[in-house]
Length: 502
Image 1 (cartoon, one colour):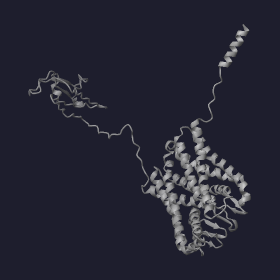
Image 2: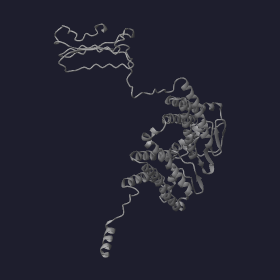
Image 3: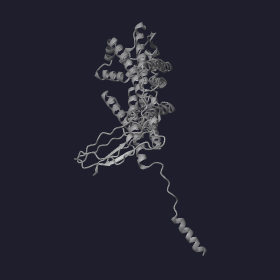
Image 4: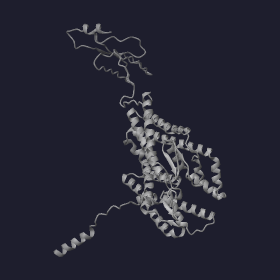
């Protein structure tokens, strides 16, 4: 008996299997993670390799330091400072970095739009950051191997990982917000949802104003720019200086914005602000010709029009998009804080060390603070004035249950117009009885063989009511008519109260 029981137990153990665990990632999720994490970094590495090879071949250089140059450009695009033969480089163009942020944000937004759960959203953001960090680890190894060939010093690993993770985290965050905005924005207050467009417009005014300052300075110093371009010694050199100037243009534009709000920009010993300008040696880059060659002038005070105009536009837009002046002021301050923090981050990324020329930077803390102050103060005044003049949007609350205009209650009667039938004629006269809630119903039969005449008689005034029969308030009589063609009126069948008829 025990042998039989043991066999049954063994058979049960073999047949009973533990429940299958759900895999950490499904096949579709794994594909999405790999695509988000490594497609854009792979394409970027391919573009960098192409640029390096074309450049080395065009100048008839050897290809021994190709991998080191690829790693160096990877660091430069992510604003990671490094050194070449003892010369530190920490100022890199913002154009490639901004393009990378835009591309990564679009890719994350597209992937988040196809996801359905918040878990998938988190996985997408994590993959967008982890993939480039892994590529950075490979680039650090390549840089360490190429240091003996091209003199590329390996950058600080912790600093490299921090910069790369920060750039892609910001990009992924922007993409996540854009991807879930259509579905999750309903949870936000209306005034907070409406600040997106005013914020973009105010930032566009600041950028356009900085661009106007740079353009005017270029026209004023065109001869200096031509001289710097001619120092390229040939078509390849001139082309390289032109491309490099275009790539550094956002850095210069950010410096112009800093000067326009009252902050300062520094290139080594050269310092420029609205109230003072100090000269010194500059790198031979044509775009730096926009820096003034003389002392500051009173005319520079006109640059304050840029932050004032941005603040006025921000306040007006916020007041027109919200239902209350308090919400408008809140929207102005939130938008000002967003623009101020953004300019602070860009100013920090645009600065750094430039070898023997010293530090290139804008005064970061004053840039962010002054941008916020100008927009918040001027925008608040503009919002208050716009709301006071009736510019704020007063949205009436619509009653879903009463979409049609209410009809005024007729004090005495509602008279129904006679309804014409192709074969029969119906003549109805309805007189409503005065009551607290008068209700009048007039049934109409479409297919009736007989023609009915219904008459509801209004009771007499209070002074004429017979005290003997107070309950008799109305009388209805239904009279059968003859054929529709006859004109004879039917006789009344009920003549109890003939004096009460109207």
